[in-house]
Image 1 (tube, rainbow, N blue to C red):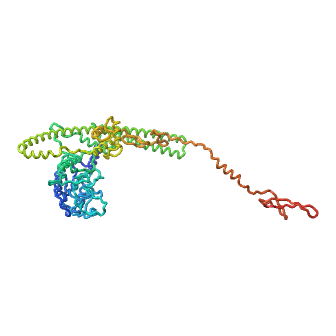
Image 2: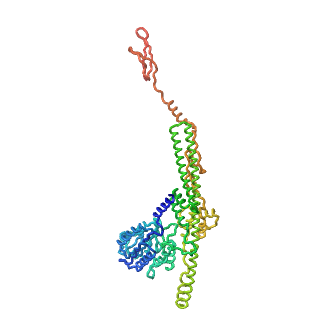
Length: 616
């Protein structure tokens, strides 16, 4: 049942990815020559017919060739092609005709456009993004080829509604946002392309020569197209490609099967096991690896699968330990909140500590198993790379032998031809004497710097972007590489020697440096997490947080003294004296603030005394 489950997984992934031999390829080819408002172009219709025939011979499932389309017809053609691209793995749009750049945006010009003013561009043309939108549903490769960089007569005659509006020469640089998308220009951004002196443009002729080569990666194919066009135009026109693809080769036409000697092996028996291993690697769970081991219990890939299975088990143990530690912490917090007795709290605390120790042990075990799995995966890639290199060396040797035989045959035929056409040959030699004998450098200094920066990022010596600018940061990163790799490369410039030296390093060279509070985990910095009551110290280690003790402070006596002085300086309030005043037969206490005085008088033959209440 495990093997059956594994093959069901393989079948599901196979349906999602699709085998290379069953991929569907579609192409839309447009050639606009018969413009109504400007002189007719001679080559676009011929180029479109030539390119369309190339796609048909290359085995494309659908090739739609459309000539001299107006605006409505171009919109319908791109809309219909977008529907077909949804069912395809590879979608290609080729356009030959006039194009224009307005304020940094590229537009394709239909045959019925007049473009009397610059604002008409928005109404009468189609933006290049419309072609990119048409190929976007394709699952594996999205390719747009533009032979539209000709000298545009519309730009010379149209009126500007705003004087500052920019109308560029040729087309503007573009960076696709969708993955696995390439845009090929007949001429570099900001320059124009030539129609040439023959029936087809130099760009179209080079495309037909290079793209259908079986097994040739598109990036190399367009590199050969660039070299051919540069040579045929006297280094005046340089095609350019924008966008990027992944690490695997992407040929327009699949490589032909290699014919080997009868006694040699017809196919590598490990290919099927390797494909099944990669499918199980995509699932990444226990069921997938157990199904693989049931199907292939022995061999090199079985050992790798067991390492991956141990990694999965370590992750499961780590997750269980984390859950158990969290549960113990919750129980400890619950008992504390319920004010349980000390014994129960100590028991809960001990359980929480044991769970935390188990979690840390599981984390460490997981890291060990991850390292083992990564090492096993690297061994697999190294072994497969060695096999691929041996196969490539063999094919190169066979090709070199075939080329030598063909060159020898061509040389003998040329010698025979020279004997009968001496006069014509002498004239051709004089013309060839003034022609360039060397090809231009294949890479500019900026492209070389970008490649070196990319390799420095791979070995961990450069943290910035690979932008092609050999600045101080790039020189500093190469200095770090010299320090840790033991090399003495010149850091002032990006050279091919530096590129080869860095490429020779398989893994990280410069150590990973993490900020405070983070630690190195493989090729990434992860945050250090401390348990409750602990914090990260200056040594990047967890330490217990010390409780703060109260600090005695001397009370400021000044406010108290000021209050006392204020009270003492205030006048005293009147208080009762305790004296009694009697008069007219009524006695009462002396009123507050008053006093009692006595006066002695005479009368009636005797002395008498009288008291008076005096209030001042």
